[in-house]
Length: 318
Image (cartoon, rainbow, N blue to C red; front, top):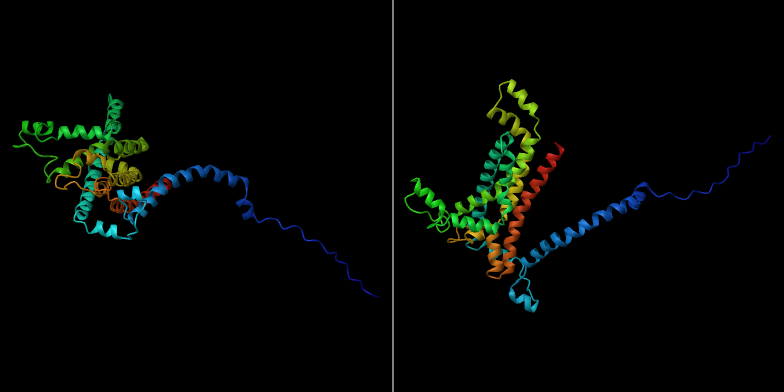
């Protein structure tokens, strides 16, 4: 007896199906998404990426007015950065930038928080007064600067007249001409400009805090300052972090307020990194040196921008 082994027919291998990951990479949905993203990506590259790259390139070149006629900008490496860091004005400008930013943010936030908490209460004309708070935002900065120059004028300014009338000063103060107080005057004006930004964001954050929390806390005797410290502040912390970091990034590059009031004077008392970048570029026409100043400013702003993104991400997660 012989045993016949069963025949196995050869089966032709089926055509290899594309891997799932490869199908996703070439799916119509993916191309549709890319088409939607493309305009925004091109806009960012053209209007944000190119200026940053061009600014960095200029900081490594001897870029002057002669370059516009000859097209030649000799490569100088880090020489412009050496010029910036060894300049006698770099240290004072850096210190003034720090003081200006710190003073402005502190004043804007404290006053903005107080006004936001005040406007959270219900009283007649609340909406009208809140809309009036936006006036500094609606006015062009050059108009605001001209108005404040008139207010702070040493001889005819209304502020010196008011202080003299109530007996606080014996002699007119040179708010914009005395190096000892010029930076303080510029900070005060910038605080006034930035208060609406702080009020708008903080007031919006206060609206999201449930009233039930305050009612429950009131039953336990937590009212007034206790309610603010144990309910308002913890609930508002994500908004506060975003307000502070955004305020720092914006204040670091403030230029128009300082130019409109003092133009960096008197005796360089209000020179900041932004003012130095402007004056090197458009007064001395040393565009390479001006670019180096602005890159230092961009680097400092970038640090706070990263902090903002992390704070914003944390706020979204919470």
